[in-house]
Length: 320
Image (tube, rainbow, N blue to C red; front, side):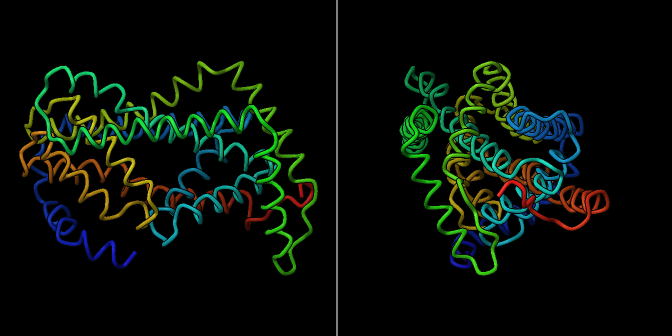
């Protein structure tokens, strides 16, 4: 993490130091960018609620934002944030296997959606729009990644062997933890939960598709609105490629929440997408305010509200 931050520090400092220019942005476009980002988070929570098969909003909202805040602030944040979110859901009374499988399915669907974005932009680029070869290569890698994640999803949803093997490995690791309550029948419970999730997605697949599209589309629209707030007139397909490439880079757990990595990657790729350098820097900062800083603060508040309602985090031993 330290090495990654050292490499991207100059660009990160340049982006963060442009904060006074936020006051010069067109307020209505900036407000639209922040509103779209909030709606994007809401779609993500609604997707998790759908897959969890619960009618309650409070544990879903608070666990999502609190887990996201942990992801954005701690080294190895993706794993720690997912762990915190899982424990919050279990503390709220949701079956632990159901919570774990739902978080995994939500993550796979979200990654597949991100990797599919270049598919929508590459036809325009290949149709004659002038662009940087780097953006085209990023789009091609995104398509390859989309194919791989779809193959993984099909294997997990249609076969038992991989899931059972994964369950056995996880169960063995859990039982090696000192003073850990013995975990039994995890592979079978994972298969049963997978079948329930598959059945629910089969009945509500159109809702899941709409929510994933809303989650990613609104996040992308937030970036476009931030660019318009600077007075720039971006080319949407090229910005989509820059956005998709940055999202893929951010999946690598190099820094908490992609801090520094996203700022450096997105601002540089936006320049390759023919956005003026000054506009790219300040738009990146405005975008990160809505997608990183404000949700992180909200996550701290949600953690306090959750603890007041449910008390200390615990795992429901009945589901082990």
